[in-house]
Length: 401
Image (cartoon, rainbow, N blue to C red; front, side):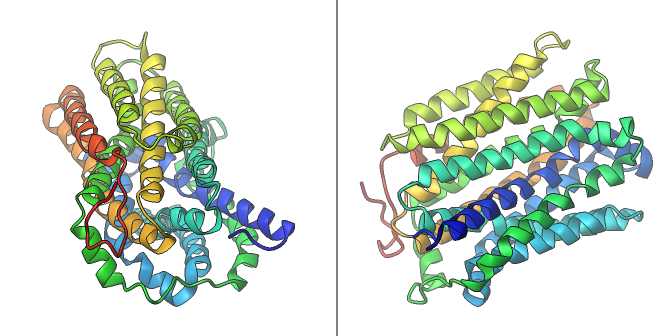
């Protein structure tokens, strides 16, 4: 249900806004700065890919444990902890030692993992009649944060002469503002219904084919998203673009991703079956990935728009599946944790594997072909997740129409 007063509702939504902006901007800032980080630290492509992979490993291993945090500190307290860890992690990774780069990344990964899982639960609980709109709002803001970070990181580092460390560290400001807006929410300290047992819920979800299809759709979508986030500028630089232009192409793709996450959940919520939408979204992904295999930069803006829009649509769709395919907020938390845990463990292989394949073949073509295979598999699992079925924690793992 909504907070009681107008001010309460405004601060709740403002808090959600800044949490969402904080969940992708620290990650999107890395890709455009990858070349500068390599030159400064002498890290390999695979090692730089690990800067994006580490948070994904956190997402994968911690997502299933999020209900333990909510039982102790409540949804509000766990989200406050999320913002605190993101702030500290960003600050630490901006320090000089290379070890701090990875250690800080690990901390902010833990914080983002909590936010990833709990925002769908918060929307399910507090906005039951506006879940499509609220999913569009926060998922599009995640994309907006990524778009801004991707576009301005190189100018901050090079044009302003502040260096890549400052360009990574500035995103802590958004998380700090989020903490200020979130402080009033901490007094609510709402815990989930203790009658729902975590082990039983996860066991039930583990027997659900639908839950696994949603999880794998989420994972393969995230695999593609984080590879694009980490490596698109480097691919474009190898095709003749300068780093600033390449960073703005990533920003362009992220901006159209925002458009996709705004439009698609609201549209898809009105349809009980989303399989036709899955077909359209995944075909756009396949076409755009194939486009990056074409030499030259003439059509790069088109491919950037298509890959950004389609990945934004598929991300919004994955989040909406978590809300639409469950009966209550507790089950949504369980499904969100499962799908993001399984999904991000799949996605974690993406950036480092993509970079390692480039090091191995000295070409971007084999890694891009791998992305075509991943997009085809995403289509397969998306067709299952898009069916008009529902799973409840008390259903014994059986999916019902």
